[in-house]
Amino acid sequence: MRFAGQVIFVTGGAGFIGSALIRRLLSDTDAFVVNIDKLTYAACLDSIPQAMGHARYRFSQTDICNGAALRKLFETFRPHSVMNLAAESHVDRSIDGPSDFIQTNILGTFTLLQEALRYWRGLDRQSQNAFRFHHVSTDEVFGSLGEAGLFDEGTAYAPNSPYAASKASSDHLVRAWHATYGLPTLITNCSNNYGPYQFPEKLIPHMIIKALGHEPLPVYGDGQNVRDWLYVEDHAAALTLVLEAGRIGETYNIGGRNERTNLDVVRTICDLLDHKAPSAKGSHHRLISFVRDRPGHDRRYAIDASKLEAELGWRATETFETGLARTVAWYLENRTWWQAILERGYKVQRIGLSEASA
Ligand code: NAD
Ligand code: DAU
Image (cartoon, rainbow, N blue to C red; front, top):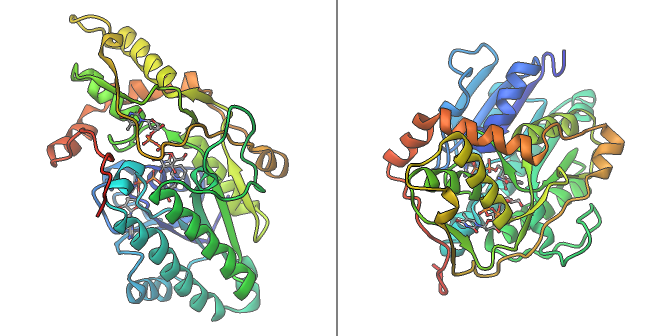
């Protein structure tokens, strides 16, 4: 069985992608998972339903900026790998308040690298060779594409938002810790994820929840910005594969070849809701409204995942159509999950317009 006898640290495991990764590690492998998460607004431990009482799961409420706490975790659990997903992840929030992004994404990654390095240096040679530090990153580090072309692993970094710049910085730190200190690192850069348990601030759940409330669906700018969508469980599968078989020091791009304009995404959500949850008030399409654009809004992202496909044999299993249908069905069937977030005080309202940010 995969990862038998291995301890894997997953930081940010109470978030959207981290929880999908942990669900997969618990159900499809024999890994012992330690979920290290600060539990910010974006966290939800209910997103890992099988975790409660699981013999191969532990949770630690820890900030990755806290070196002393991390050191204790390394000493206690003696991990074989670290998968770093802890981050501030929402671009609009980074426009209004970049400070948390600098703190967690840059300083947190630095602190985690330092503690991982300290621990790794104390391992015997065989354990050192087997150890991996896998940093999970984004295609936003590459900036914006024109109408043609794809991001590959050689594309120059050109981040445009505070979020993207903080993730780019963290990638550079990971690269340097490998080149300078020999820490066995892996970096993956993935495109936009969607699927179950995504926090309501992101485009797809945001639109589903607004539409169910008969509220306007705020499409930024002209709606022609393109994102390359990947179903979150396909991302989780790719991450386990890279951890297992990725080449040390390499980066791998992950994406599902599902480019769509934002307007197309919103229209498809409206079609699915018209079919699955028809409203007496009329088609959900009537709710689409164009609003002021996001500052620094990247026009197009598109991933060339051929390195991952050729080297590790990864393939996305969901098309955008099948994945989006599953996602809309999930939000319809799991209202208690997202209603609890709204009840905690989260407001599905416009942010990210501040010209002078704090
Ligand atoms: P998310 O916002 O849903 O979850 C982030 C998790 O990190 C939360 O549980 C939060 O509590 C935790 N966290 C935040 N700060 C922390 C800290 N200082 N210490 C410990 N835990 C902390 O994010 P996500 O969408 O699941 O993204 C996970 C990772 O994947 C991020 O690194 C993100 O940059 C990257 N990524 C996301 C996408 C996407 O489309 N969502 C695409 C590519 C890459
Ligand atoms: O590309 C990977 C990145 O994808 C990840 O690194 C980020 O963590 C993740 O948040 C996501 O970033 P985006 O900015 O692309 O995602 P978001 O869901 O915020 O927006 C997707 C697109 O939809 C973007 O072009 C902005 C637009 N949008 C978003 C919202 C929330 C709207 O038009 N209306 C909205 O209400």
